[in-house]
Image (cartoon, rainbow, N blue to C red):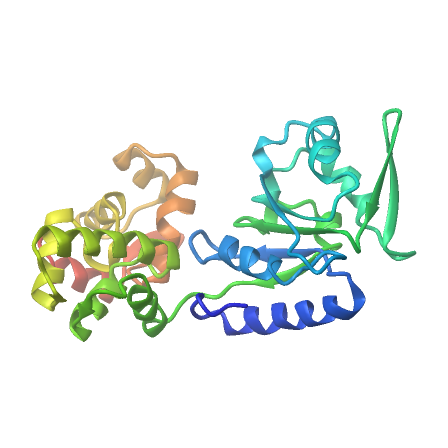
Length: 307
């Protein structure tokens, strides 16, 4: 089921169990895939859905829905359910489910309450909609689980994604560059600048392939990796320019409040906290104790890399 996917051993074990149970029970819990951007949630959903066969033994179609595109419960029932779900066997996947409209969330509180059986009837307007969960499977995913309405979250079974190890990141590069021999030191550098997620590895692998084709490279060495890093302006640890700017501000000032960082970068406090500080903390480059300060590792990165 997951031959082409790297890592996430616990996720694979759980999904294999639910796939096996589905073969006999014809039902799957309402799974909620939770993890940071780029960890491969959608790819795992796609792989898992292939194990959900219809009554004829054929793979159920997977209907991927960007939750922010649903404007209301009426939109869901009238445009999506009637046209693509009603009287069909299908897997519904709500990506970024924290963006679902409030009235649909409240509808799901009733629909997903299956304590009395696997078939749920729901009245919406003048219509009665039937959810047979031996035919319809519903999966969710989100990068912001804290924004899911708590009663809805309680009805979902959580599948949590972990960060990838460097070895797993290197394996992802190898899988995406099967025709190119890559030096181990080059692999280590690619993994270190990938920001620790599968999606960035896939994107970087495409850049490596373009580099090798452009320069007729058969074996990608550490020198090639350094050249590619220079060409693309890739920063140490895969930091982006704003994160590098934050490190330099902290070096110059010794420490800074969040408000001061917002003023100096021109970004909102929320953007700094959610989009930049989390990664810097994860890489042990900054420390927050009321004020923002460089760690020893952060100071060392700046000292060793003149960008």
